[in-house]
Image (cartoon, rainbow, N blue to C red; front, top):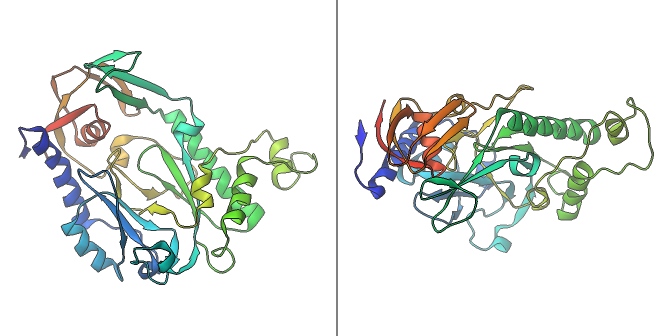
Length: 320
């Protein structure tokens, strides 16, 4: 059992659980990892530690035993000197192609605001905001990711993979080599525009190729974070790592369905004593949870960690 008594110590419970996870975590790393820049955000820090370089998975694993990440990334770009502090000195060799989809951009999400622990309509000092995610919303976002994957294959001949971000969205990635890797920002913007704002030169029927047929079938452009696609030197979350905003694992979604369920997407087990900061009947994809301010409730560890990282309370104790 891990028990804490102060605010600072309470954070050590999640820190310890993350540390234990990374002791045996299986991370999906690129074959050319020695050419990638790595970065991480430490616990209790607002900024990333960047310009790190590792030559093999064992070297990275040793590092993670010493420096436990709240968030963990590698670069979409390959560099001659990934450890160089100056971006111009790194020596860009090419980049993968990325697309980022977030529920904020696609769904009409409900944002709940709490003042002094109670739901409020207006902002106040030290207010807590919580965004409610639903299964339907995440299924909708995943459907958009599938559409992008299909467009890339059918219209560009590119093979893409879809990754759950570990929070409220998906990343679509194309591992690029040759001409694909050397696409500049303007080329990447053209692809982003093609996917998000299609304007084919003629109309057709449902059997027409490309966007002509898609528009005839009622499909529309996909809202993406264009900056992620346009920038050839982005940092991307490492599959197998944990998203520190939700405590859920980043992983490749290989099928054509996605079930947004916190307990199945979290790598943690056991139970926690959760002290709530708010009074609210919370509707999670896993079910309904009634919270009361300054009251401790026993929750599955996956749920307690999720709510704690969302700022709705703190973990007082953990039992495996």
